[in-house]
Length: 201
Image 1 (tube, rainbow, N blue to C red):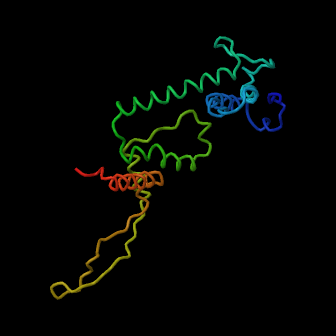
Image 2: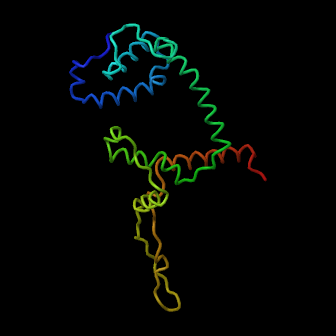
């Protein structure tokens, strides 16, 4: 398979700047995308990705990069090996250094970001998304909470009929899907610890 060139009908729909962004993005993700692929497939995939950026694409079948002039697929394997070390280092550092995240912070990471991506499908073309402040995130959550006020129950109190459920509201949409999953998983974890007697004081 030859690398994709500018004459490819699929690429004609895109501007060179868009193709360059796609090339940079896919190059960053290449170690993940090429995991478990054979070296030939990795090499072809790498050439395809690099050919998207016309400034850096080359017609050389033995494409190399600046790091010791090693073929791209060798670099991918090296990156994959170092990726696990970096990932473990990041996990250890985050466990010791960073404070525990609140539900609100978790929402910003997953549920809120998912909803923002649905609203803005072209977000990949923007250089950087503005991060919402804590107050803005709280306001966003508050707006999305749904309230139901259909409860009523009348009883006689001191000779008068009084709605004893007056002011009661059912709130839905308080937690995102990601938060709900975390809560359910944590409850199951506590149940399991309870069965093993690990929750005793």
